[in-house]
Amino acid sequence: MSEQDDAEREFDLRWADAAVHKEPSARARMLAARWKENPPGPVPFRADPDRVASPRSSWVSTALVLGCVAAVILLLGYTRFRAQY
View 1 (cartoon, rainbow, N blue to C red):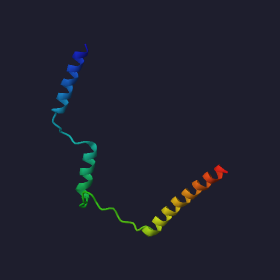
View 2: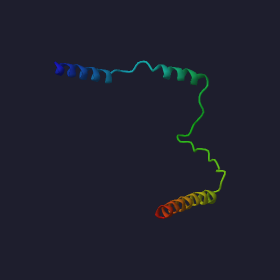
View 3: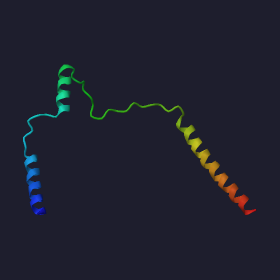
View 4: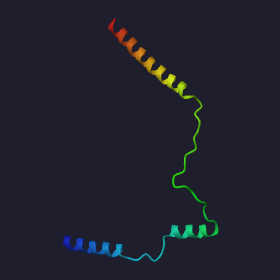
């Protein structure tokens, strides 16, 4: 029984794949109607994102990260020192 169902399903899939598309989708029709009156301008495939300057310079960010790392190391060392005595 399942072999018949598989064969029918395969036939339906082949028939659907071979069908000629006569009517575009609703979205395609909507866009075609909209673009007929107001065509879109050219758009590059991948537009460059706008570069936003960071409020801090890179050396300030680097110093901030290194300072945080040093503070964590000192805090861990202090807690270990306190745990020994």
